[in-house]
Length: 226
Ligand SMILES: Cc1ncc(COP(=O)(O)O)c(C=O)c1O
Image 1 (cartoon, rainbow, N blue to C red):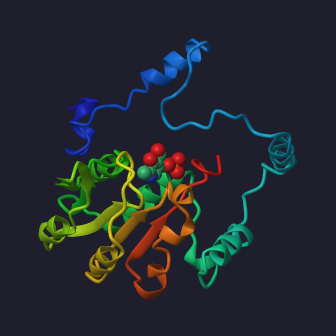
Image 2 (image 1 turned 180 degrees about the horizontal axis):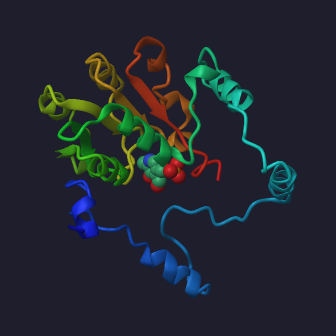
């Protein structure tokens, strides 16, 4: 008996809604609108970039190498031992994809501190994981991280803890000592540093990588470098 397509979806994919970027459709249709959404770079690529793209497009028929030169440079810039400490993806979004697929099985838990960037939940949902959202606290008219809440939320099913440094959309930082406490649990700990350049590298937690094998730091070329 032939079954309909619906029957073939894994159960955790079925209820998910498609990501529809109507705001971007609208912006392309109406160039007179000012594109203030999605944290896009308003400046088009420079002549130097266009020249480089043209140069390398001419060898785009070949598989690329492993990116050891650029990975090595990024490792050096961040005080890491070698290119092997660095993974490059198509945006840090792809790195979440890789990390989540590496550690999560259906039913496993990911802890995030809300409000935060939406992709952690999206990636978790795609894999049948359960997102555990621990809200920030509101003290002295400010949103502050609640590390006790994060530690309390840990269970035997916790496979990833993800914290942004600084956070989007609140722009705040968790205390350094709390990064160390969470790293010390040994659970894969993803620290999202998409906006670290705006705060200065002194605020980065990259030194934790040397001490804790479970720490993964994500950075991106799409914000400050854009
Ligand atoms: C906190 C945070 N992390 C990660 C990203 C993803 O950036 P990309 O996939 O462009 O590297 C964004 C994008 O808005 C973000 O706000």
